[in-house]
Length: 347
Image 1: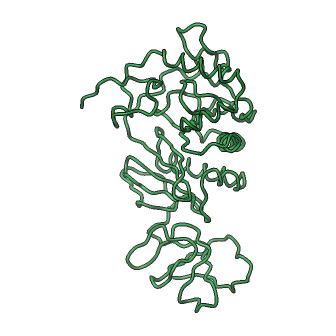
Image 2: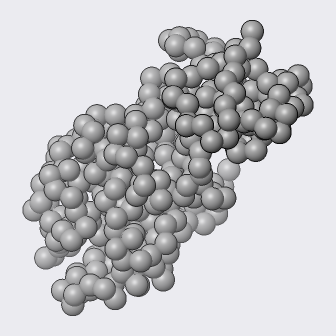
Image 3: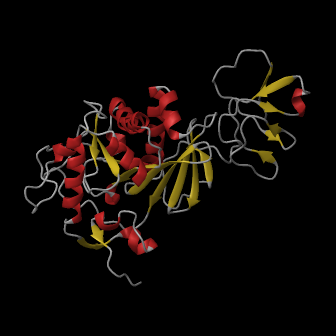
């Protein structure tokens, strides 16, 4: 069974309703490559807009609104024991998911062309599309795959961006009670208990980059070269955010990068046992040079605050638990400012 629509090159773009089609191997893709194929048919897992092939006879364009094969369609079935998805699948009209390391790592990408890096995606896409993208990711992770504990990392690729999700690793966080001195909810909480005079949580807030009443931007409370973006309301999972909070949290990060003029490296959003705090906490990591550039734009008060923050962080007692990254990789990017032990580790 085949279905397609052919139009003249000057004709208006067809409506966004989806049409299923199977393309034979003689067809070539002129706009976007297929995301998966088998030996007999191309099974494109994203919304392809223009395809040139023998069917067009060089005069028309075959406009494929959506192409898939039944083998790759994500059926609306509840997760069941022992179920493994295909290595790559279109999980919604806008999200492609790949099992990079089955049982350990997923990669999710925005399916609609043209490709964009993450900052461009946030700045050019409508709010409702950004929200829908992250809602679809949450549905895939928490709904279809039933994941509660995972490390989610957003980073740029070759002209686009991807969301990497790591799971099934040994993690033991968070290590404080949900509302006990929550640094996101209690502005007077001392970030460095046992050190006097200490530093209050509210002292780290960067109001010039915050978007109240939805999200607050802070200096990293452990003195590392990055920033923390928290919803104003106490929530523990991205799926619990309303649309304004969800969009606000991600847009604060990209707006700050653009305003300061520093490059994007990665954003981290941990869930479940991968967290160190109960309050949802988006980490924006930047390099040392980029952080120095940020400090050069700050007033003297903020620079003094940063210097004090680093001194307190360097004197913070280390946790007995060995740093996960140090144990796995033999090194940790946070160095002396890591909260966990970097002692000798033997398998």
